Amino acid sequence: MLGSICAARLAQNTARHDVKSVFQCALSLLTYPTLFMSKPFFPLVAAFVLSACATTTPTNPPIKVTPMIKSSHTWDGKAIAYPNGTAEVTGLLIEIAPDAETGWHYHPMPSFELLIEGTLEVTLTDGTKKRIEAGETFFEVVNTAHNGKNIGTVPAKILAFYAGTVNMPVSVKVPLAAPASK
Image 1 (cartoon, rainbow, N blue to C red):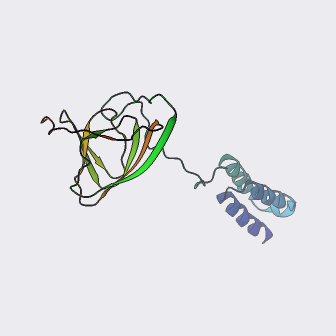
Image 2 (cartoon, one colour; image 1 turned 180 degrees about the vertical axis):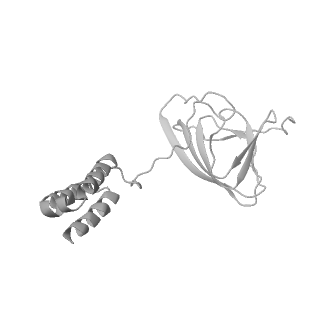
Image 3 (cartoon, rainbow, N blue to C red; image 1 turned 90 degrees about the vertical axis):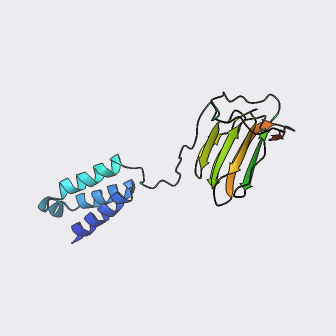
């Protein structure tokens, strides 16, 4: 009876990756030599102890890191360069209603964005278009005029971080005619 209770605890502690408790259970089994020798417990104890030692990382770690984006270029292929001066990072939540547009503008600094919700289409002056869906991350174009339009049916929500300098505007409006067709 004692052997089966300890074996059950041994299995539970191994599943929880509680190495200390696994060793304590294994040692308590060894203190009952007649029980230990009369049953085929040795392979069982050895397997549990070895598995606890081999897998001490929990299956659901308390911290999970998922890479979202990494690049040295914006989505139009240009190299990302940080402006000179005292650094200032600005984070914004931008919401664009369905069928609304940002108007032609450019960013004089790199920005890193996550489209939380909606569908966005960004158009450059040469007619190049980029469609962005909810959940996508991207490096916005720098010093390049563009217009963003919500082509979805729900508000487009963008989480944007701009890496600029103190007193530098994150966006500059540009009066432009319609882009070239592509």
